Image (cartoon, rainbow, N blue to C red):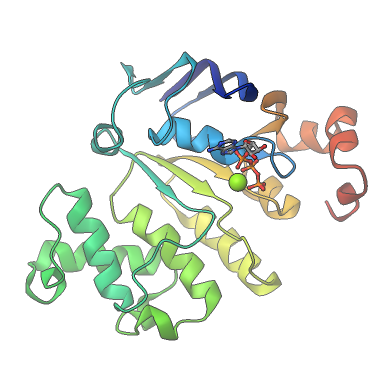
Length: 247
Ligand SMILES: Nc1ncnc2c1ncn2[C@@H]1O[C@H](COP(=O)(O)OP(=O)(O)OP(=O)(O)O)[C@@H](O)[C@H]1O
Ligand SMILES: [Mg+2]
């Protein structure tokens, strides 16, 4: 599904991605761990096409997309949610999902789309709202939604594109323990054939939802293995030091 080979990115003299290689099978749920500044978001920017690698290659579904524009990658089924919310605050949850689905389907996005679109659009909105636990909040303006619901909607915008590969950058960033549980359920309930790369700082959640884990440090893959092997890795423990106690 996704093959990343020897991916490098330099900003001036600073190497923020160093020979990153990883391979994801269809339906695999890969969690990316790593301390602040390890290069996790940079990796997503390289995969999604908002950054161009200095060297290396990215193959998605057998196609070399290393230098393909963002839109082409999206058309091939890649979608992402962001570490910081990327929502239209003045619109409702329904309108946000409608816009995301419309944009993804390649039609011109219009703020009127939701009121006038056909049954198919309403089906996508209803399905995604259900997936992210927002069925009861569809007609609320985003500005009146609690922060945790906004994080759910952030993932919903990516899901509205009906992706094959979903990149989630810290979906639980800034949320409390109840919402961590909600995200655990949300991720578990997503279709099993959806391939996912999830950056996560909450170890418990990461270990719970992952089929496999990649650990980045200083732009390099320093460990890859099962959740159990990651938990037991001395190298990974050393990277996180005291933080490991809550894992
Ligand atoms: N546009 C840029 N120009 C220069 N340096 C950058 C740029 N973007 C990121 N960096 C640097 O690249 C490194 C990796 O940053 P990145 O945002 O990928 O880390 P991260 O693992 O996502 O961290 P966090 O957990 O805090 O989100 C950092 O040292 C950062 O300062
Ligand atoms: Mg980041």
